[in-house]
Image (cartoon, rainbow, N blue to C red):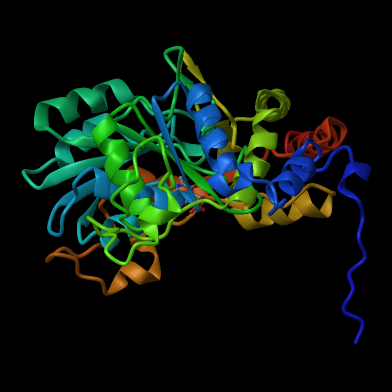
Length: 406
Ligand SMILES: Cc1ncc(COP(=O)(O)O)c(C=O)c1O
């Protein structure tokens, strides 16, 4: 069997995801004979550069957004039996990480216009057991964090900003991600910035939170610090059979040097990458401006949307008699790209059907706005790397809308 693969040099495609210095940095990181490389410099460089970008004091690189959420919950001191509030529209990972620390996920409803967590409903869901709130900056839109921080301070709750879908989004002029107590980013393949398919970053301005998150994500090694992902010890110290390594329980959530090297190259183009997504969203804005059955996620004044996707609420099944799925197929038939529906409301996924956590069960009706909105959402791609292709796909959408206007 021929097990060779046809190779195409990545520099031959100017629109490639990794068309910057990714390859160059990865090959440097792979140089096993480089003395510098033995100190894991790429992770450190990536953490420092990312922290500066976001405006956070500490950044801890991890191997996914999900592991970052897990470490953040541990850092927040969430214990079995505690409650953690997260929104009704998000991926399941916020609830899954909550369950992994033994806590109960409590779902707060969303604002129907911004689609993000509703501070009013958060307030209603707070109990004496609430230990953390996970806010989710959905599709690239930061959440209304000020009222949530006010509640957190009143009730002594830690706010974890899930910024997996939002990079360089702004809330009242400030970059989202470190506006809560601790924030988590994802560098999974489709995100604004990727570290080669999987990856994540925890950010915080609080040293204690950074220290716990670092140690948890680093197997619990006692010498880890918010700044250092590896121990800077002499071999004579750690080769000693009497050397004691661990003073806490952790997991191995560390980022690899190769991922960090890719991340460093991606960071060099981060503003360009985000501006492109924003420019594509603008094209969608223009295309659907006069269409009353496609209503975009609302960006409040003083916010900057980073457009992980361009999300619209579809009501064509009521107004033009075309179901969500028929619209999807028609768009594709005309040459448009497949777009995603929103993830199911987490507690309506089959895994929750027979689940009982700390005496709580989960059923329809917990978040009526989210339940109504989720099946109507269409999330159009904004990650075209060629603006001409993006313009062409948007034009097709415009033509499809026009068909139902006349
Ligand atoms: C809002 C949100 N939170 C968390 C995650 C989990 O990130 P990862 O896939 O890197 O584990 C994702 C990933 O899609 C996400 O969109």
